[in-house]
Image 1: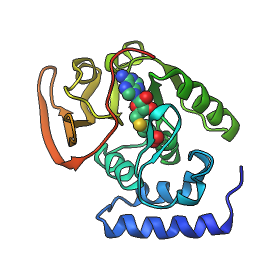
Image 2 (image 1 turned 180 degrees about the vertical axis):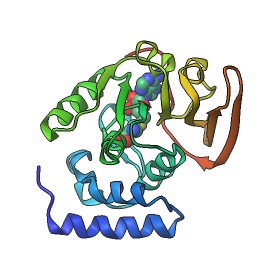
Image 3 (image 1 turned 45 degrees about the horizontal axis):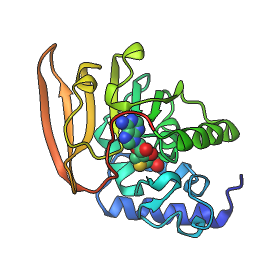
Length: 214
Ligand code: SAH
């Protein structure tokens, strides 16, 4: 896999655009500037890798828009050493951005077998090392690895899975788009054993979070 100066230049432009659109977190901007998104795009769509849009990938799913990836990552308020769970591995692009932040322990779950296999293989090829890449239903979270300092859901949920709230550390953050046709970006911060702060951050559009494996 190559990363040409042309791609690097396009990436710098993309980072500039994200800054203009309001992404402020320097580490997040650097991470987006580091990850070659064209490695995660479907063949044939490579030319669009640095356009700030979502594109189709295998199994009728999409690679998230860079702005959305940056926005969600920023909302996670990550610190070195944090244990992070991603629901919806998809293309692996968001996972790669998390890994580029360095010092995080990243777990990622995908329910669609074809995508899971394809992306797990890609991670190997690229030498990317999440702690675990799991084929499973993210609705359940990952009870045997819990608790997590941060959980990011990259598919639209009609309801907030209880398991995910329960698998947060005290102080832990869950960033999840909630809604049917479009979704309201929502962040829960666990403030105590049974208490959560909830805040919303505008509208987005995601593929649906589905129950069970496929
Ligand atoms: N983070 C991805 C976004 C992919 S789109 C990227 O950067 O490309 C959302 C993904 O969530 C799809 O791959 C879909 O199969 C997956 N998904 C949907 N419901 C799920 C569930 N219950 N558990 C795990 N993954 C799920």
